[in-house]
Image 1 (cartoon, rainbow, N blue to C red):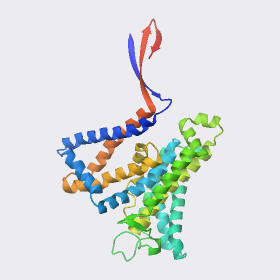
Image 2 (cartoon, one colour):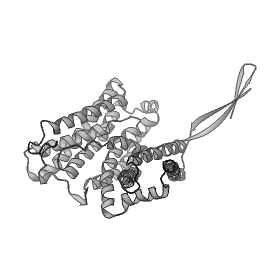
Image 3 (spheres, one colour):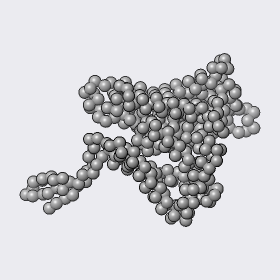
Image 4 (cartoon, rainbow, N blue to C red):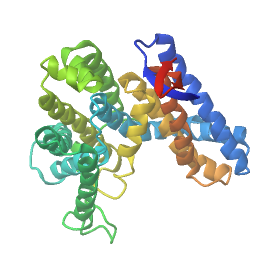
Length: 364
């Protein structure tokens, strides 16, 4: 009697052509699946995609609004990619972003320091807050082997509830006509804008993407992170300090998410109010995996995801479809992209198992 078994076998090497072509083919497949979904919903797929493209890139204003959405996705995507590279599942970028925004607002509202230092200090304190918030689950993992997925996720809710308590309670503007939110920051704490509402955070994201690419692919520390992610036993055999690297990687991961939060409050609202927590940290997980944890690719994927969010609003207006269609299409994109990355690293083997006289022989 013959039995067929299908197994995934890790490739010894991955060609550069596959790394380049698989994401493109996966994206085309996702557009096809999305077209089926739209057709079943009674919408014309081509007109819907065209409306989304116009909504995201149809004018200079729309382009800048897409960049506004892309900046926090870039920074948080870069942050989680550091942790994911060593198979530390940091699901807490949302909370780290929020704490970064809260810390930056704290400095801008309450610190008495020279005006010229208000903006850089606010950004720095936001970065430190995000790093320290990520350091909590990192320390628990390194010292006690506490599961990081649970701790990072739970800390998101703690950070969000703290942030909501502050702008609704002790930090609330007494002259805000009943609207929740703090007073406006001094102009010295405003992050300069480049065009429209797109601010200097875009420059930070581009520079950090290049720096992170160099660190991950051209330095010893990047090599150590990759080894830990590939095979933690081999990493121990090579003398790599697992616990130290976990803490360092998560500090940098949280720092980037904290910078995203600081840029949001200093560059967009200029006050702490509702709207800082918009699931950027969770969407960043999709961005990082779609980019296969490549820092340069994260920039482009973040813009794509932001375009779908901004374009979704245009679909609601022009096509009379729910704005959530953009979120649904994100999911339609994620599945083929993740499947594509799986086949980039693994190949399928079909194994035939022959059973004779209670003995098993395996042929592939």
